[in-house]
Structures are given as structure tokens and as C-alpha cells.
Image: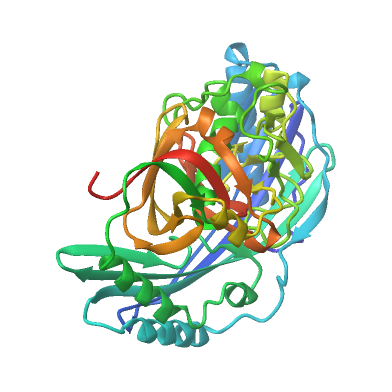
Amino acid sequence: MPLDLALPRISLDADFWSLRFVDERVAGHEVRKNVPLPLSRSSDRGVMATVYAGGGYGYAATPDLSAAGLTAALERAAEWARATAPRALFDTRSLPRPAPRGDYASPSLDAPEPSPRDWYDLLMAESTAAAIDPRIVDWSTGVEVRHATHRLVTSEGGDVVQRFRMVLPGIAVLAHANGDAQTRTLNGYRGICQQGGPEILARFGFAGSGRRIAEEALELVLAPNCPSGTMDVLLAPDQMIMQIHESIGHPLELDRILGDERNFAGTSFVTPDMFGSYRYGSDLLDITFDPTRAEELASYAFDDEGTRAARTHLIRRGILERPLGGAISQARAGLPGVANARADNWNRPPIDRMANLNLEPGDSTFDEMVGRIGRGVYMQTNASWSIDDSRNKFQFGCERGVLIEDGRLAGVVKNPNYRGISASFWRSLAAVGDASTVQVLGTPYCGKGEPSQIIWVGHASPACVFTGVDVFGGEA
């Protein structure tokens, strides 16, 4: 979408209006079992019109970016606002009328990008390197590149342009032996996802990973099952991001707390009266909302309602301070929030979403954390997840485990799983890794809302130790 898109003169009987333009392009490259798959490309563009009128709220979306199309969308949104005003949960005349000005760009946004042939050459090299044994029965390598331009214009004179480039590499290997099959991936399914360019692959050592991932898949398929029992767990960053996402991120979404997601994605065990006093975790737990970390997947300067983004503590030294709620939810709940009203495309309205939700590092090295565990399991890379409607009781499985005995890593096990209750699990946090253990990861597939929205989320976390955890293996 051109950044100088001309807007028509807009005359609308309304208290406030905004136009949110989105132009996104995606290119996917994949090699499976040494066979290049066809290059996939997609593009999408359109605009969402939002209007406050008569105390009500209305929106309408259109792919027609002509003056007539924009005017028609605004008028339709105004009609909805006036029609719904008598039944509105809140009076929009009390809401902020943002006038943001500024821009944002991903790191190395305009740096040269590999050609499709270059991408396929890299993927083929890693695919070939993974085919090391007849017991490797399936494997794939891939990289997805996303470009997006978002522009928000408001009736108060706001005009924000934000440009993004995201790169999502992946490797997955499936091994089969003795009637069992095990999958090993590079940091989970699209767990490596950051803003920037090809430097992201170098940052994670993508080149040369094909053989290593295949070797670990073979190791897993021949390994014993994880033992069961109550023990300590050391969770790697690529599992910590799922723990943070499901049992902190979603429970703290303010619209969920207010009941908006009850019919689809559930509620939350968190209630409005908990903020400011509730002990969510041990003193070692510090959680920040941080859309300002340049390379992280969900970084931006303004959210989709025009609120400026800033790094903010949600949980400090274990105490719950504030929810993940945008300007509208803040007004409804009477609670402070953050700039997290986000939409996944031009044809969806903004709702309360995670962006970059990070666990701040502590002061323990990896070796120190291992050394403090008498009996436990080091778990890597999420493989499965299940959590109840209130985001409280959960069960997670990982791809790879390593037993810890008397402070030493003692051998690989497969099918490591653990379960717990969010309201007590985080209080068992006994050690937080230092900066050397931190990884900046995330997911492009966080689902929520009716109609459904799939949005990208970033998570940065160190490795962490939890005590007295209910652990079980694949035979439990």
C-alpha cells in the first residue's frame, strides 16, 4: 500500500472516526524430503472504518480503497453506531479520541532479501543434511517471509504509518523405530519468528541445524519414556514461552476478564479485584509487556486504536499489577492497561491481545540451575498443550527431556509432560536464568475472538526452575 494514499474530504455526522489501512504480503518457501514445494504467495489489502456516534460504536470493512469505498464504509459504520447505541455496554462519548502521529519500521526493513532461488538452496542444504538414516521417515525445512504496512488515520488529525518485515524459519524431523515415532523441531513449529531480515536465521544458527535436529529425533525415538512423579523441572525458553502465553498472557486479557470471550475462548481465573495485591508467583516472577523490543515479533509504536506503546510491568516481584487491556477495556473496567488493542487484518476490529509478553531474566546460570536440582527433568520445546476455560488447570508436553540427577544432566528421555494449576504453579518458581539463557521467540498463530483472529505474539524468556511439579511420561 503506498504510504501517500490520498484520502477524500470526509464529512461525517459522528463524534469520532478512524480508518485503519492494512496491506500484507506473504511468501512461503518449503522443501520436504528433498523435494522443493511450490512457492506460495498471497497478498491482502483493505480498510476498517470505526465510528463513535450517539454514544454507540460501529465498524465496517472494505477492500475498496477508492474515495467512494472509504466514504461508504464510514457511513455504514456510523449507521451501526447509532443503531446499537441504546444497547451499548458503555457510552463512547467518554472514550479517548486518539490523534497519534508517528511511524515505525522493523529492523533492517529495507535491507536486501534473498531471492526465492537463494531461499530454496538454503532449505535444500538443510533438508539433505537431515536425511541421515532410514529411520528418518519424514522431514521438512521452510521459511516464511511477511511484509506488512499498516496506516491509522483519525478524525482528530492522527496519522500513523507502521511497516513490518517478519521472518519465520523452521525445521521438523520425524523418526520411526520399534513401533514408535518422535518429532524434533527447531524451537517448535514457527517458534523462531522475529522482525527483521535474513540475519534472524544466523541469529539462531539455522544453517547447519538440519543434521543436528535429525540426530536428536533419532536419539528420542530410541530413548526411554520420561519417569513419572513429583519432581523439579527446568524449562527451556522454547517451553517457557508456551507457559507464559497460556497461563499468564491469556488470563490477563482484560476483555476475557470482563466476560467478552466466554462463549468462545473462555474466561479467566483472574478477577478485577486482584490487581495491585494478588500474588501471582514467587518474588522471582517479573513479567513485562514490551512492544518496544526491536527484533521481537509483535513490536510496534502504536496499537490499532492509536495508543502509544510502552514497556510496562504486568507482574512485579510476583505481585499482579495490571491487565492486558486496551483503551476501551480500561474505560469499562476502571483499570489501567497497556497499548494492546490489536487486529489481525483489515477486516477484523481490534480486541485485547498479547503483543510481546516477556519474563525478565534473573541471575542464575544454566549450570547453576542444573546443579541445584537433586531429581528432575530438563524439558525442551513445546509439543502439546491443554488448559481449561478459565486458564487455570493446564497440561503441557515437550519434545525432549533430559533427566537431572544429583545436579547433573543424566540422559535423554522422550514424552516428557507436566501439569499444574496456574494459580499455584508460578509460586513454585525457584530460579530464573540470567541473560545468557534468554531466547526471543514467539508464535504467529495465537487465536482468539469471534469472528476468529489469528495474530502474531512475541515472547522472550530465560530458562526457569519450578519445584514440586507433577511430571509424567508417555506411558502414564
